[in-house]
Image (cartoon, rainbow, N blue to C red; front, side, top):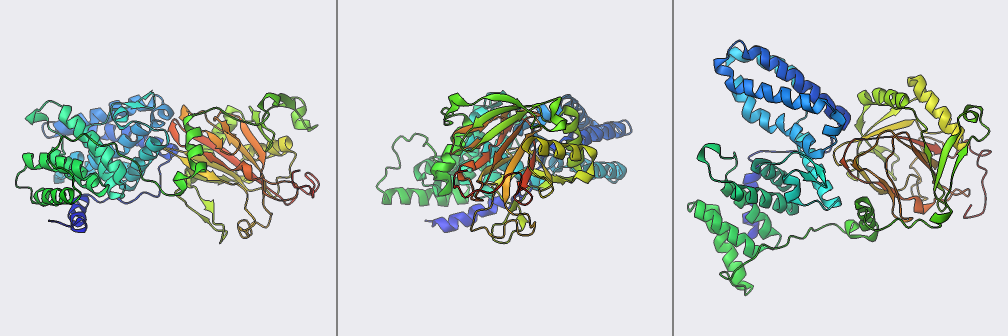
Length: 536
């Protein structure tokens, strides 16, 4: 009999076959688009060298054609292509795992040194294994949030949107990446899918997948056993032994599983159906707030905004000279808290300017540490962001002036314009924009007080997902290019408006660009005077 801890260490050896680092940097769509251009250039480089040594380059020539065809198709509409997280995952995979297995062996000959150097130069800014792991994590997040069926994803159906299909090897890879991340729930889902596809495929010795069925069974049976599905683990272990009777670990596991079931009084010979796998989550993800957030992202239920029948649309100019000839279209979305949408506040040219300025500066988005006041990355906020000053470009200054005219608030003490690009599964879980009373040092370094208001500009449409949801008021805002949401975070007394707590749903398909302007208390003394009324 093999105790479970020893079983764990045996399987840990499997994980060491290929080491993947838990990704903390999630590739933005803006940066990933450059991968397609690099892919195109690599294809052209390979094509030139194929002409020199055609007999030895049959495989490489085929690869070059694949790169050219793939990049040509994707670059016809990069945002549409990269907005699909399965396509982005496979793009990263081809320059990590596939590269090591298919390209490097061909380049090993010294006569290919020049080609190797050219390709390495082209690859210097391409995705790495950390990005591959991050892409897999993003897919799992989308799967959980939007209740996507594993089989449907593998067969090219991403929540109703057509995408690339996944092979046995690719499903196995997703399962193994989950395993390396100690995520046994998704290990089971994707290893089972790999097994189902492998079983359904007709046997052809000349066209086998890289992964053997016994590897899939090895991972899957272990993950099931650890999650408590011992009987099903035993069934799969027996299948593994039928393939490889000399598999020592499987033999030991079989005895262990049988002994465990006997002690539990469970028959080891009765007919057994595949169990329904339940996801185990932490306490917060079981909370009402998080469940409401995810349900709203999926579009379940109806919006329940208070007094929705009284909400109106209007044109405003605030007697500001810049708005008199072209008033802003204001749509009321909520009275409590007061929240409005301003339509067409930015032009396409302005948004393109901002994206071009921000792209070279994009870094992993940060949040303010409530204790230290320092900016740091967090797993509950996944996007890439950049900060733009008014002095960076006339367009930035122009946008700041327009925000001031629309909101009637002083912007001299506001934070710089933050540009965020949400890529694969990019999201921001429920949060406040303002600092609560116990978070005394949150904005201490700025010296401008708390965040009194938020002006959130959507700079792209999103095909699926990516909505902004307010769980406590039942409001869901779908990104609309050129529109901006505006709300106050603080009452006039300076107390926080707690039902402004909001979240950014994961981007399912598409690319999401937003610009945030966080406006602070200092300088608003005459523009939004204080009040002792708690609800004003």
